[in-house]
Length: 303
Ligand SMILES: C/C(=C\COP(=O)(O)OP(=O)(O)O)CCC[C@H](C)CCC[C@H](C)CCCC(C)C
Ligand SMILES: O=C(O)C1=CC(=O)c2ccccc2C1=O
Image (cartoon, rainbow, N blue to C red; front, side):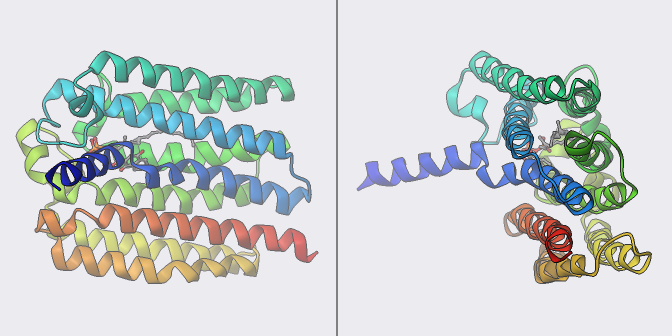
């Protein structure tokens, strides 16, 4: 009985360390950028789409594994049982596994650039990876200065969507840029929410996350504006005729936005209660992103 309980809690720790839901942050920018390309050109290169998707997932695996490696060096993760470094006790193994994922992910993107005979996509993705490194790796560790949400916005928003759109069309699009602002905001909301319950560990390790800087109450208020901006921007882009009317489907995700704002407003200063807000934010990001992509795909299919 006791052995079974230990096994169950051990597998829970491993699941929390691997973070399967977090890989949706790779799926959404590639899907939205590709859906906009499909809406505008009525064609889709499925080999490029699937290669980009798998590569992006591998890059997120690199990001998360190196996050545990670099955080183990500053001591910020010393109380984090679900750190892969703490679970395995082998920092070098996690570091080299991460580098293998990065090499495989970048190779996939290189293949896309090779097929296109154009280096633009690989340059955009390498820039994303370099910025991702500055978030957590030495000597930069810009996340410790509270800059993570800005890096997150630009990498998962304008840069990732530009790369996904360009991989299909080899050109740029104002509509794609507008959509990238929305995806950038919803991805940054995930990172922002992940900081509420970590305030004590972050303060102790000298990490000035936005929540450390603002305090949890103001953070909860800012979250409401960020969520509201996702829907206000969609209405604006539809009114400006940049987005098809179908993209108003994004309002199907408003329930998760309300749930997230209510939860964080009620529990912003209670770490154990607020800790799952990151996963409500993941659901909001995934549902809003999929509905946005569907809105663009329906435009192509309805013509
Ligand atoms: C690893 C990230 C957050 C974890 O942060 P933290 O250390 O506070 O939390 P835990 O240790 O408690 O888990 C995410 C950081 C994201 C970063 C700012 C930007 C990364 C850019 C990517 C490389 C872009 C990939 C784009 C792809 C779709 C082509
Ligand atoms: O572990 C985390 O907290 C996060 C991991 C991750 O890959 C990611 C990506 C984009 C935005 C936020 C996050 C996380 O918060």
